[in-house]
Amino acid sequence: MTLAIFRHFVATVVLVFASVTNLYAQQAQPSPDDMLNQIGMLKRLEAMQPDSVGPKYQLALACLNYAVTCPHSAQTEPVLAQAEQTIYQLAQMKSADQSDLCTLRGFFYMVRIVQNPAQNGQRYYIDVMQNYEKALKLNPNNHLARQLQAKFQEGMKQATGK
Image (cartoon, rainbow, N blue to C red):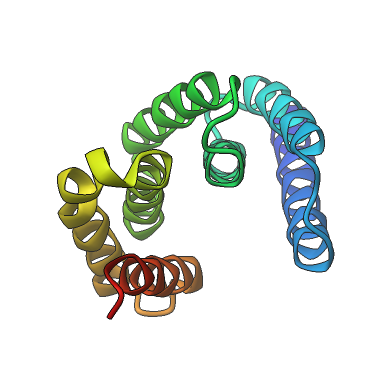
């Protein structure tokens, strides 16, 4: 009984933390150091709740946000490796939302394109589009997938000059 209450408490803390983080992100762009600190906090929280989807999802999303914001930073590759590992762990969980997984995968490939458009653009373009389309097919109300897809399409239009 105590374990169930503790898990509920931690899940509530994660949701509050995620809400505050999203609100903060909308108000002001955090510095790279702030983003790395957030990733560190989420890694600790995820370690405390290894069977919970929420902390893993937030950790992967924070890693990808850092990587797209700082694509050429020295910390980007380790952070992307963390994101990839976390996405893989999420995929192994039966309770993980498949639409969210596709969104994270699409975002991961999008970051790779941002890192090196000339080399990775053609390589990952289809992966990005297919993952966002699948995410939206599974859940048409997935706002993150819709936003990222629109941002990606906008970036591709600017890159091709159309």
